[in-house]
Length: 83
Image (cartoon, rainbow, N blue to C red; front, side, top):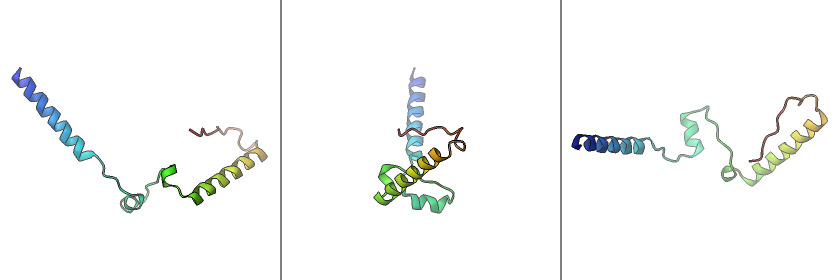
């Protein structure tokens, strides 16, 4: 029984050590892109400026207008959820 409990303690401590060493520190996108030039940033409400939000809304309106004007070109397109 002592052997099993010691093995469990060792396993638990190893798990904690490995888990702590692999937790990524928070970096900003510019620092990450210096290391990984092909990295892309996921756009969320937190990292968009008001101008970028307006630009994206305008682009969305243009796309919807283009899709309505050219239904044959978007025959196989699927709608994107806003969720």
